[in-house]
Image 1: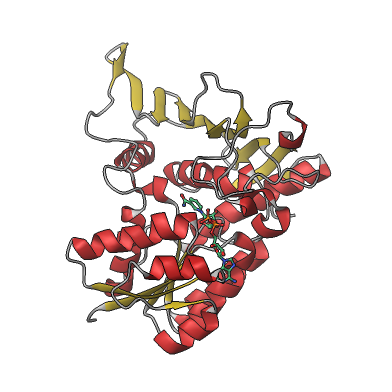
Image 2: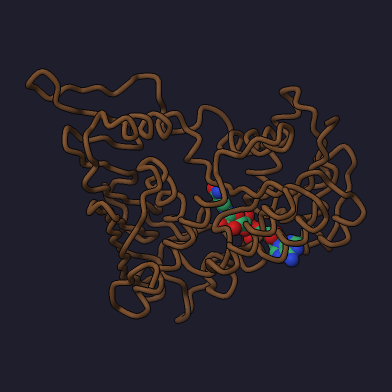
Length: 359
Ligand SMILES: NC(=O)c1ccc[n+]([C@@H]2O[C@H](COP(=O)([O-])OP(=O)(O)OC[C@H]3O[C@@H](n4cnc5c(N)ncnc54)[C@H](O)[C@@H]3O)[C@@H](O)[C@H]2O)c1
């Protein structure tokens, strides 16, 4: 394949600073790639992003862009309510697709998208950048080898300290599908499940809270948030969630996802409690018993943050898969499993009971 022709739909915060910047860095590094056009329904955003392209091409209508440009690959960085329509249109046009998280508003949509990609022989992958840091790969390898014995419980904390997400759509259920679970926990839940070898989940329970509108001092938006980003209404998505998963082998996972924690010390990361030791992500720490004592086996060369641009590894993996035809690091079944967990957590919170999967 000669020069790869890539297009972007959604020139907001992450489309611009995640996807587009990553592609441009790969071009600077010598990748045979051309970002042929960008699209945003907001003309100002589309034009401004296009100013960074050699072609300068921009569109407000993604169907028109796909028909005119016939890109080999398309990045989708629009709010989740549009992912299904944008992904299906890009696949129909014959393109491979990198879509943002959460993949879809629900599992039924996600299944439709993954099936369409499979049937059309096209790649569909997701923007889950924490998968690609060296610490993630290391933890999966020691868990899979059984170095730690059985992991009997996984603890997961995620979110922001005293910050609501930057773009307004994150707080609106009709656009985002959900709050801190769909937008933030999805990263960490996917990562924990992958490190554990994507085990079967039998039951899920959760409670969710939407406290932002009730706080006396509402948390500020991120510094890159556009004007009016904080839309606090009674119908806000959840900004705090707790959840509990039980796996088929009896092991468990608990999660706490939070956008509102008052500024105070709190962990963000994952901890694996295992028969012979404890392993942690962010920062990486591994301690296990050997020769009758607890030994620190944390490798010094496996950072849990990307060494370069935060989205570079995702873009590189996607383009490599497009070129070579080999699968991406993040596969269809994995994307469906994490979407199923997101759906089940919401269902449990809504029904206020444990959800048994497969029922
Ligand atoms: N992987 C990550 O680390 C990460 C980080 C931030 C956001 N995201 C995800 O990226 C997606 C976008 O988030 P964001 O923060 O960039 O939001 P944003 O609001 O800043 O940008 C979304 C853009 O999509 C455009 N858009 C909406 N509908 C459109 C349509 N029909 N056609 C063309 N353009 C359309 C909007 O005008 C806007 O410019 C979300 O799914 C979000 O969860 C991922």
